[in-house]
Image (cartoon, rainbow, N blue to C red):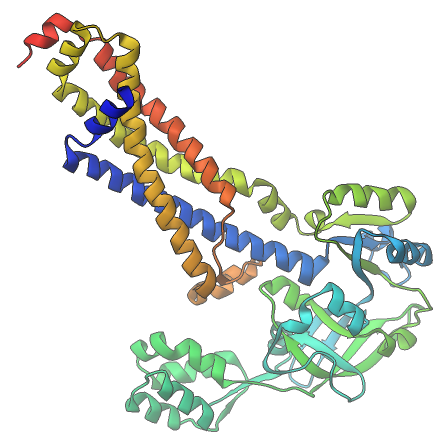
Length: 475
């Protein structure tokens, strides 16, 4: 009976109840969607950290971490490779040589970490081969001698990117809805080559209207990029014997990840093209990257097992190598509930106010119920159930609509291109696909019930303090 009465009481004043329900619904939608967006970002960051940057496990010489000299190669490499080949927990692994070198072209220079890899092995551990930019060559599929894969950031530093307005670009911009005045302005610099992004942007700002730049500027910049694939880069570094070594490589591919710092310092060559000139012997490698099976339960136990077997090697997990991603993975669930807690805490004041108004409007009714024998426990339960019903209706609607929004944007994505440079400086993608685990909704439901119970205490105590005789006389 109490449940039935409580439900009917909620809708006695439909307008007031709907205001609270709508507020709870909007708050829940906001919290769920923000949590889904953050979860999508974290999932992408973790995927990049593992499958692009550092892998699940990395094995190195402890001395190499202190002083990156070429002589500090992975100890006991043969024994480690045999163990990894025969371990059921290992999905794939590969090895790298690593050289800090100075790269230079006729127009620019920069310091790079030159990694010697086996491309076939690398594709089983890293997704770098899928990150080659459009019109940016290929991943070691070229037949020319000494190929190298560099990042778009490195290509820009070495002046291996120029910008040109082509007929194809004009056709694409027209297809996107550009008017004739914009097309005519771009025609004035058609086929003119700009060697830096800064010069090209300056030219666009001088001939285009601010509104055109806001609408089409990003598309024009991307379509105008011309990568100078096949360009030669000369590297200078110190060999194993301490002498200076020079070697030239030809660009076969240009990649781009979501992490500017990674892109800025990493270039990839075939190990066979650098081992001889650098002075490496067989089984001389500076790091071993390991990808474990998806169903592995405890990453740390595998690391500890390797560390105990090969105590003279340094074994680190991706959480230690990419601490930002590791911290987010460990604490993200807590962040979700903090966000929802803050939202519901703010909504609780509105719920309390609404229930107090409801109690004050029904003083005579409540006094009569207590006078005919309804005890204080049942009065308290009635007020509490009214609060729970009011809150849970809004939260369920919010979770359904928030989940639907996550489902839609999880497929089409959300593009934060306007702040892409800032996001990628911290390793975060500007394109996010929201996602959320179903268990999150169960946690939110429990939180809603707790907030509703707490919000019902003040109105319920107000009702319990009523004197039945005086309440009945209230007009």
